[in-house]
Length: 365
Image (cartoon, rainbow, N blue to C red; front, side):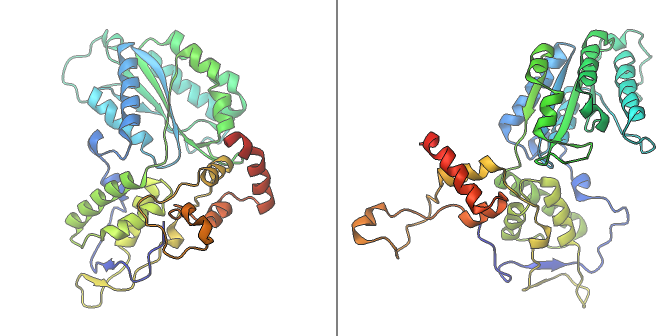
């Protein structure tokens, strides 16, 4: 996407804006209904169908994977609320470091949760000794102990025990963030190799694990979500909403990470004041370059962009052409991307890119 010039959109300021709680807008203005979730309707339907099927079967395992900020956890909480499913979420203890103690804590939580139903403090009815066998609950895991990545068989045996020893009807939901780096040492980022080691195809088939893989949030969907939050914040804190052009620029610079885009929106909308104490627009606008996410491309993603060579269908062919007259009939609209930018994002040298193209070009055509 073409970058906007420095004076092509406005920045805004609020003199007396205060946020004493320091609450993030991604939490404060979180969606209250599944219709507001920034997610493609096909993925939303897949997750909803998987939860509904697991509830009817009184248990099951659901695996959600995808890049950061693509509404994985949000859609789980909202769908569980609409289906009347209580959610128990495992939280890592700050006192435990990665190792045997953390793994044991994970296993104790899993074993205890499938044997004892969660307490419903909102219910005014008398406790029912048989309620555990009637009410389906959801166990949500957004993180896994780092040590389990090196012990896949132990983890897989725990999943088998979950299905065979479960006393209370329970749906096990794993929400795992995919990382493109194999050197990630975080408990919340998993590269494809680690995910395949923990959840191999044979295990998914054996335990009937439903797997939904999320994509980065599309720019159009993100623009709609950012506009909703900007309007809500503008109404509550009484400052002008940003122009649509700024929202589109912010969405394009976030590489499909909605959480990052919301944090940048909050920072940029609350960063300044005017001297006279009034709301005001100024002609100079902040640059978003320092807030952009590292949008590196995987190798085959970059090769695909070059080989498919998608063009801007709605753009007219340039009047000035560098083709000779006898080749004018081959004149085409401009590319939808800049090849040099794609090559820089894939972190390969020119010789390596040529070698990969030489290898894949015959098979592609």
